[in-house]
Image 1 (cartoon, helix red, strand yellow):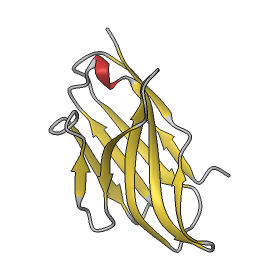
Image 2 (cartoon, rainbow, N blue to C red; image 1 turned 45 degrees about the vertical axis):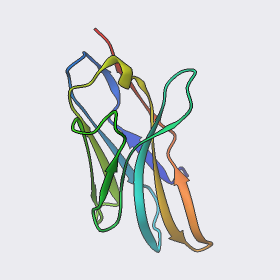
Image 3 (tube, rainbow, N blue to C red; image 1 turned 90 degrees about the horizontal axis):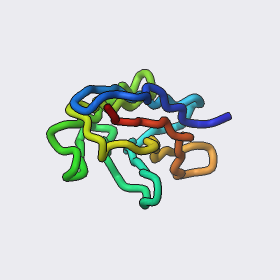
Image 4 (cartoon, rainbow, N blue to C red; image 1 turned 135 degrees about the vertical axis):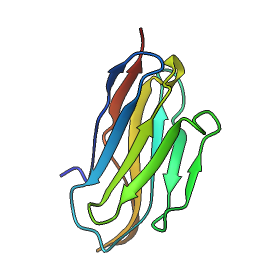
Length: 119
């Protein structure tokens, strides 16, 4: 069972918007920070945004002011609202979560959702 499941990716024109979701598919003792990363073809994976359990957020400079990360702790879900999308935002987007489970502290990743920005 994949512990984190992303959805919401797709093809969008430049200037458009998408909302990504990532839900924990299993129960953890605690979920701490959650985040989104992306990896474009031929490039290293990079951090996009993070959010703590208390709601403190951080963003990569390249998405500041265009993307918004949020979470619903009751639904064990993190979101990424992406506005004013640019072709450079095209990538496979992954979510991750720092958790405490039966084995202690751990970090889990989703399988990724593709975002393509093209006219």
